[in-house]
Image (cartoon, rainbow, N blue to C red):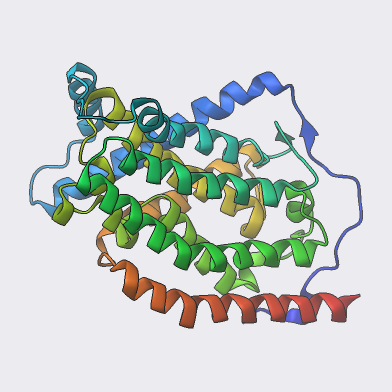
Length: 322
């Protein structure tokens, strides 16, 4: 357990982060795609090994080429615009999540409520996943959409409280201030429960691993049952991108941002992001898929109280320090 006597005081100094031109948001989009590609490659290699076949790092390339050639599926009385918006919107949301993550000493967007911004983008995912299931007018897709909402009702509130703990310690909702407040001791050292709950939330809104029942094989793929061609490519790329954006946001919130020896700050952010992302990808096969009703019970009776206790501890320490 961390020595709380050495928890650093909140540093009331000007933000060390420099705002860059909004045009650099394009780079954030490219970075999201690059991280999503990395996650897909790691997942492909892990899948090959799990199936006992030779690991092929180029598996995502073949899959992208196959889906680009595949025709889009149409269904009877589908709400096509909303269906397309749901399947393609995940990549946009992941990019909007990433623009508030400082890359070392630079950031594209550093609003006073950056933590709330990230949480608001996460809530948009609710609508997009549900629309992906509802749009094609398909039973399996609709069942998958409601499965996701059941999971979301269980993970969202604990996730919100996990995101509250770092701002309480930093006395600010600005992401750059949260990074500055970790000078000397990363928040993960004395907020391990909040960090773990946050990662659970990231897996939840990415429909990943134990929270992939919305796209389960027992309902023919659920929300992805009627997706094909470019729509399927964008949806699954969006899932990887959300996982990557969640991993990237954990760096300024819990892992000290760009703090680290020898390497420049921006490179430390990337290294920490890749480590967290790899852990999330590989955890997919370590934890069984949770039934929405079972996770709702666990979420409300165990995860939520644990997050609340973490927030209480952080609040008491923050008051004691001041």
